[in-house]
Length: 265
Image 1: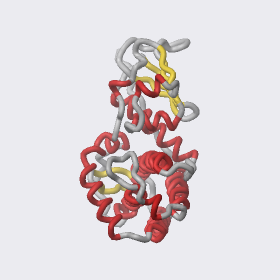
Image 2: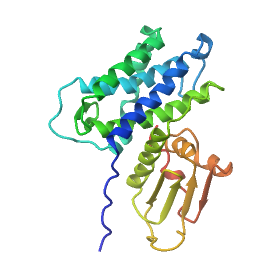
Image 3: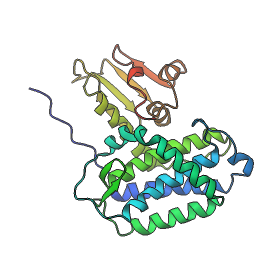
């Protein structure tokens, strides 16, 4: 008899809204510390500068308000994992929009203030079940906000890497949601029960085809911290490097996740 399908993880709509607004607020507070020299610094995102990176962060959050301003679609088509896996499809279009907005928006403080105000106003009245029409299809507001925690956490890490000493903090709820969604995405990509992936204190998933573990210590275990997991899942860190530098502890013949990562770029 095949194992029962696991129910998709659900997220508290209020906590997710607060997480998005809080993490965006952390980034907004850092923008004032970015001098012209710092804004011109390179990032690990190809040829993007810091200015283009922070512009992109504002765009990813503004997309929520923009979708809420549109008519509601008839039915949901996407879950949060679907949107993660489809993200590479729209990379070129997103990059073009970022460069255009960065060129015509010299005042980043005003950009972030307006983005935050619009989102706060719209979230005050929109239910979590409200459907949004986005590029990839239709998705509920709460599920879309969960994907925004991934964008915000990943790009906060990119920003901290590009500007040493900036140290933008990570909201605990945003980091938790981001970690859980990326861990669940691995389980969707590589379904099974032979390997347990632990990202304390936020996530534990079983994945990879093979003998299913039922009792005692699993024979195949991967354990790492949340930020390392986020970097691995999004291609910011290579699996072999993470293992060699002891950022990841992996034991068992099915504990090598190198061929499954990254999950998104």
